[in-house]
Length: 321
Ligand code: SF4
Image 1: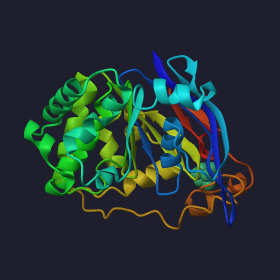
Image 2: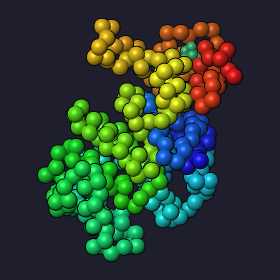
Image 3: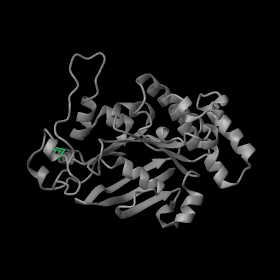
Image 4: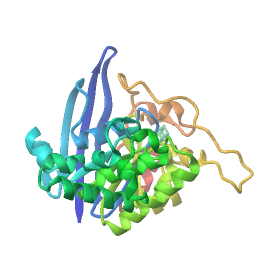
């Protein structure tokens, strides 16, 4: 059963250089208890997408169109007050990128975890603090951490605190924006294992945002690859890792270093396009080693490869089913 459906989402910002088309017609869906990986380079639109789901877009947003259906209800129609009461933190919560560095230095971390619950005023302070302690233990920290301050914690501990904070109101969906990017590899693995455990035990859905496609392989049931504000390929983890169809996805996978292979990892030449004037045709054409005649003129539609698997590349026109 679908928990979330995003339909034709467009997010454009005003800037001194013109209109930035950060997200340009994205559609995706997520079932209950499923983890969806959103993969892309910086500036591909993945963070804008998550900020739109939480309704915390920056003030220079100029166009915000499309539908976001949660549990069958179009939440774009809710007033700000309704959204704050019913959705933000209650139903959809988020671990923001770099959030572990924004913990308040003068408040005990346990209090900060409990804060959304205290603001709700549905339970008293004692109950909220008890839930905070329970969550600390759930994320693998001793409950004594409750009385510590942010400067007394390591990066991995702070990220566990942020995850605990996102879980305090028992949301149905947690968005994790690059939750491991500032951590050592061994700590990254611990956080990924924690997320896998939560997905299984807490029965929650997750949107895992990352620039590292390899990292998503263990956790995510489905993947959507973003490039220049568009989803260029999406499918199940099996389809995306086993039979990637879009050249950009293939190049992302070829760029993963392997411990046991002799071949050096490949890199993707060039840089993503300027989104104030996105390229005509396929947005990847300037970097694509396979471009051919229609690529720089006609934007490819999303071709259906097989059930759940779509690729926005002219090479896949013949694969259409
Ligand atoms: Fe490459 Fe053309 Fe496919 Fe774009 S449509 S990814 S340029 S082959």
